[in-house]
Image (cartoon, rainbow, N blue to C red; front, side):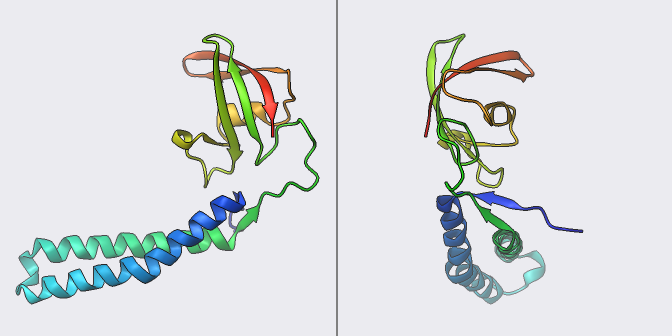
Length: 157
């Protein structure tokens, strides 16, 4: 079975590479030291320090495997061939929420990089899907569980 392509911006790729490097070089050593110290406490069968450290080690190793797989299947979003004024992957979009008259700014990224709190929304999210292909001045409607949201596209960079 083919592995799913992971769509990333250059900044997203760099962030994942930095996290992987930190896990490999810093976190692995920290956890190994915690395990060593916990073993020195004696009987590991009832040693919560040892259990905690082993659980953290398993989490770190799992995250390393996940990151390696994501980076192996990464496709970097580039600006080449992108149509001016049309929302596509990597675009930064300024919107006006028509109902509340609020200005919102988002960047459309792949799902691996999505972070709504940092205004990075996935191309697979309802708003992200609706925005793809939209142009400046267009109004998009997004079906969400609470009803319909309407946005006017003000800028595309």
